Length: 440
Image (cartoon, rainbow, N blue to C red):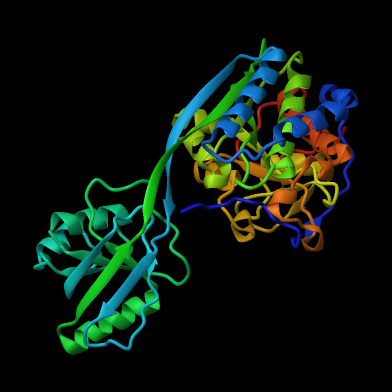
């Protein structure tokens, strides 16, 4: 299922601290920010939509790689495969002795198509032990969420030769653990909300026997390949042994030029990399241009999977750039996955951004900071939110809507925040803790 991760945060409340930019080497670089170069990167990238796993997305990667190499960086291309799911055209559950009941079913992402008819049997949590205690062959198993992953439940149902499965949520709200890829063995599955699952289970207890038919058809899973691009400014001498990430997303929504949503963040990443290329640092600054972000932060997920636990622990801050260049935007804002301050958010605020306590998960989508936070990496999105009354449709996200001043301001904040970590004026930071005020 396609998850578009567009950080639309125009309604959120931000608290401005209006703190001055710090002095020091990184602050001095701010005078060298090239607004025309920033705008030029956006113009070049946004000539065509850059939908994930397309030739135009790869052309954007090539452009980013060429720029980084011009600045003297060695680059590494990281390919990754992922799956996307098109929802079924037909999805239904009918109970034979309760024909008037309309069940609110949803599809299991990457679940198989198929029909199943038979008696419903309660299979508890769907563990192998529970399924072995019932006669599941040829029947539809009713399984509650929890204890083991959804994929394992479906595999267990298939191993028990069940005809199909009904998975019941154990909490109110949406399901939050879709399958990431097709299963090697499975049966047709539908998902039910908690309240409806309890209703069906009660019906089963009262009647003793309930027969049903479920249908899943028209669902399509496809495999795609995209790429991350990685470059790093490594310490030449003193080394804290820590890493700071600067990330952006080089793809766009399929029908959008993605000037603000995508290209603006890449432009700031490139300008930051250019200005840090010849600077002395005591902490590795790693630049990661992420692919397939608009297919559900797939690039961020692939990048995290490539890291060892030790590498994850070395990353003390991740600054995730997107939507920082619109002429209609408000102040540059730091947002975190859980709405709480962390090191990158604190540093961004200290160097001129504002902070919003709105959680990224509440803003919609599966953003990079959420993926990083799950891996234990302190991360903050840096975004300049556009007010609701000035937001435009995706095809209108064109370069003429971009502000050189907004791009330059974002680059100033990123340079200063990264400089606070890597510039040699501060000791190693305890991972994930608030930044100490520099006093400069």
